[in-house]
Length: 70
Image (cartoon, rainbow, N blue to C red; front, side, top):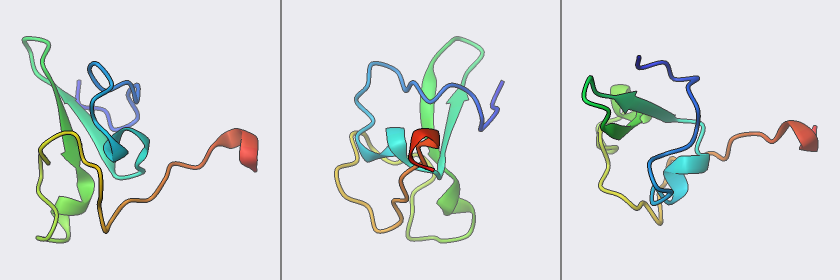
């Protein structure tokens, strides 16, 4: 249900940087709501667990590697 490897589609696309960040985990509730969880929040208190969306700037942002760029 809360698999970090789940589809990177975040709701209606308003997640900003989070949608392409390696630290993203999509959490889906039993009622079908989706939440953007930042896994950096587990080790660094500067990052909120559920950042307000859209995130337009983030010191911890790391773009997910595109398999076509390897």
